[in-house]
Image 1 (spheres, helix red, strand yellow):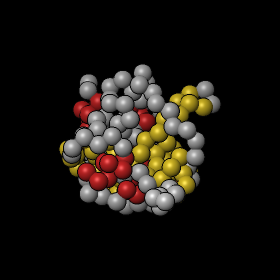
Image 2 (spheres, rainbow, N blue to C red; image 1 turned 60 degrees about the vertical axis):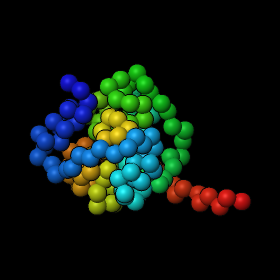
Image 3 (cartoon, rainbow, N blue to C red; image 1 turned 180 degrees about the vertical axis):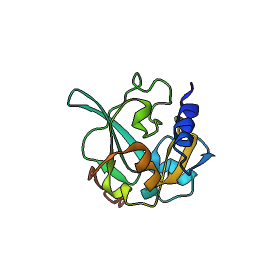
Image 4 (cartoon, helix red, strand yellow; image 1 turned 135 degrees about the vertical axis):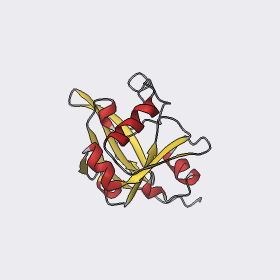
Length: 147
């Protein structure tokens, strides 16, 4: 079953409110925010890391930076475009860690397996579905001054 169909099936099976949209190709979470006309703080950035003998997903806002180096795992997420994996760990049998700043937002938007498709839903419903561990995982991005 293709990833988008699997993701939509999981959302629908749990009777969660969400909308699906398609936008021009966007490779970063900030570009998704721009394409979806949303503040970057509402758009999820999924980062996968290896530790404690296994892979883990962490989810932070597009306007935040992870305090450790991001890893790229093409083999693990074979059914989606690199960097566009949805933060729904159950699809990949992975635990998910949600940044506390993003958990406080009313809505969450995330890639649906491509750099063109996005899912928007209430953060409360996302937390109900994914059951992530909510922890502080990021720091504010440093402002760029251009000098």
